[in-house]
Length: 140
Image (cartoon, rainbow, N blue to C red; front, top):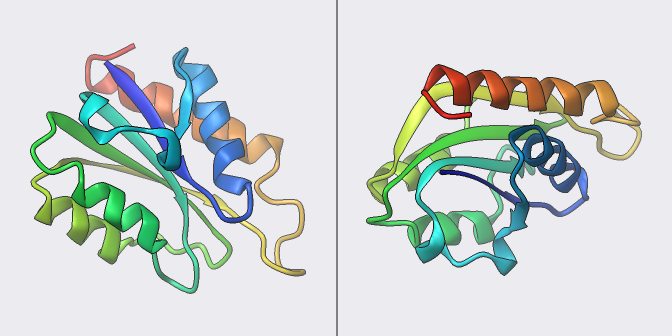
C-alpha cells in the first residue's frame, strides 16, 4: 500500500503532494486529517523546510507513527536547497520507522527568492521521482 501525507504552511507541499499522489493513483492527506494508525506500507512524506527546520506539527505526527509498519520516503520543498533533514530523520529513527535512502528536494520560494517555485515542472519531477521510487521497491 502507498500513502502520501503532507504538512504545509505556504501551500507548496500541498501542491507537490497532490502531484505525487495523482501519479501514484492515491489521495494526498494533510497530517491534520490523517490518523497515523491507518498507515502502512510505503509512506511519502511531503513537507517544507522552514529556517532549516521541520515544522513541529510534522515531528509530532512522526512520533505518533511509532510501531506502524511503514517505510518513509522524504520529499521536501526548500528555498535554500537543503538536502539533509536531520530533525525529521532523527524523529523517524526514534519512532522506529525505516527510511529509504532516496529523497527528493523541490525548490520552494520565500518572499522574492525563487518566485513561482515549485512550478509545474518541479511538481512533475517530484511525481516522477515517486513513481520511480515506488517501482524500485516493488510497488506501483
